[in-house]
Image (cartoon, rainbow, N blue to C red; front, side, top):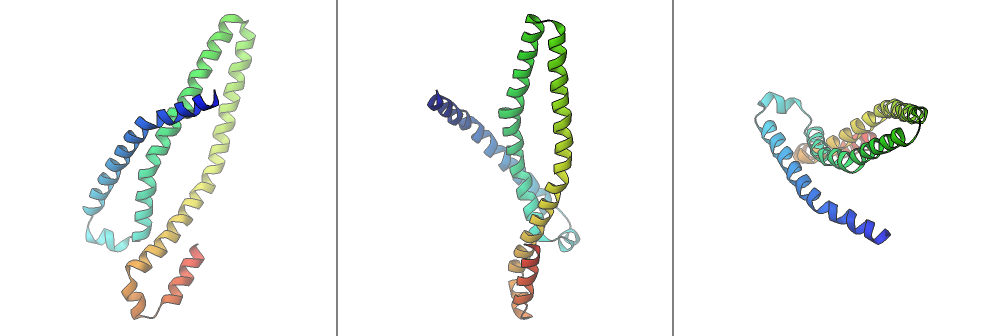
Length: 162
């Protein structure tokens, strides 16, 4: 049974990976075109590394959201709906109310925990973008760094953000 479950998992990834790759490609192309159409002042005032990191993270997040929705949320909601229906049909209404209350409590607790975690995830994403920005910008402007003999300064900036 375990082998069959693993085979089914791999088989379901085949169509999903095709759709996911095409969606990521479309999003990346759209964002790249949008970035290319921005004014010169926009590009001069932005930190290239941060922009690249945000674009990369954004295009990859679509696949993660779709995978989570398709393989976790939808099956869970279907299972809950079937279970509630069966409990409501086979048992007295008080069992149905107990289960509904439990599910609602779980959803509320999940939302509260997710909101609490979001602030830490946002800080992590900001720090990640900053360190990638420092590395990318120092490498893109390698000539300027060399011209001003600023390798140590750039290394220190990178290590601070890292």
